Image 1 (cartoon, rainbow, N blue to C red):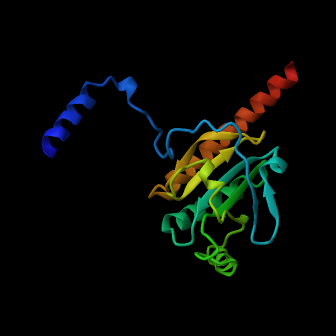
Image 2 (tube, one colour; image 1 turned 60 degrees about the vertical axis):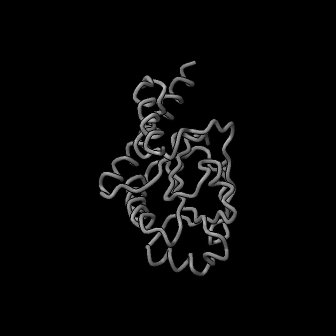
Length: 192
């Protein structure tokens, strides 16, 4: 019976026009949610508050992860290298732990940041409310981008390519595209 149902299901999928099937970009978290306004206001380990509203004027890359996530550690090394590449550009890099206080204390996160040699701010999203704006299930690492106007630039990116160079190229291309779109928007606004 189960074999018969799976055969019918596969036959129906094959008959369905390609346009009806969902298409997701490689590495996309899921189909972009229609979120009217994405916000966040999170504290870092050093007590500083990072509010998306006050960070306008910069392209923001936010990586969500956890200390137990091995691909997150690889991703953080790549992001640190990208941070150095974009140090003279209006780009901000943030790492957000989605672990609860019980899962990871501030002391553990500080130790993790030190062992990973992180220079980017480490923020906490204890209840995952910020994370939930981009994904309805916890699969990390998850990277989201915001343009210089503070608007979420879809899609979110999930996962870490096994090849760090490939991953950095992908992230670099996304950042450059957002920067160039911001420049084009500013130029066309000035011409009006």
